[in-house]
Each structure stands twice: as C-alpha cells, then as structure tokens.
Amino acid sequence: QVQLVESGGGLVQPGGSLRLSCVGSGFTFSRSAMSWYRQAPGKERELVATITSGGGTTVNADSVKGRFTISRDNAKNTVYLQMSSLKAEDTAVYYCNAVVGVIVQRAYWGQGTQVTVSS
Image (tube, rainbow, N blue to C red; front, side, top):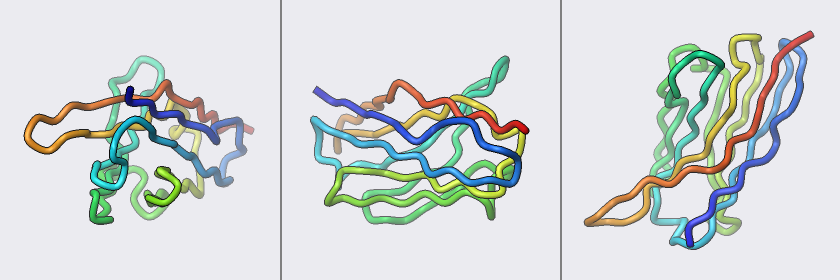
C-alpha cells in the first residue's frame, strides 16, 4: 500500500523559511519521480517542483524560482521542499506526489500540509 506522509508545514512570517518533508512507503522510492504541488484557497492545484529518480530537479512554478528547492534522500525515502523568502502568496496546502511504476504509471498523493505565511 503506497503511503505519502507530509510534515513541516505551519505558520511563518513573511521572509521566513520552512522545510517540508514527505516520507514514502509501499513502493520503490528511489525509482519514482517525486513532486510537490500546492493549492491555495479558490485556486487550482499547481505543480511547484519535481525531482526525478536520477536526482534531476525542475522548479516549475515561476513564482518560486530562486526561493524553493526540491531534494531527496533515498536512504530515508524522503523528499524535501526547502522554502525561503516566503511570501503571503505562498500560503497554500502543499501536497507530495509520487509517480509509481515503469510501464504502467500511477500517481499517488499525500494528505497535504498547510503552510500559512502571515505576520
């Protein structure tokens, strides 16, 4: 059974930093591409960043380039999202996503972790 468990969200002041973590289980973590998405109230879910099984990274959201970094530790089955210089518009629920499988791929989601940027 695939499980993704996010942690690290919370309330932070503008300009602050947070590191989100997502621990995966029930699949071969090292072979799976991992991504972070976010969804702000009233908005569609947005792809933030992706890291491939080989460690290649892409920050997809223009609004976070230069501020957010995705990384992974395969020994810990964990993917991270380091967020810095946080802004109010970064407030959202952040979701971890795993693409599992080679020939037939399926996407799995975590339950989400709330990040609120406010003074």
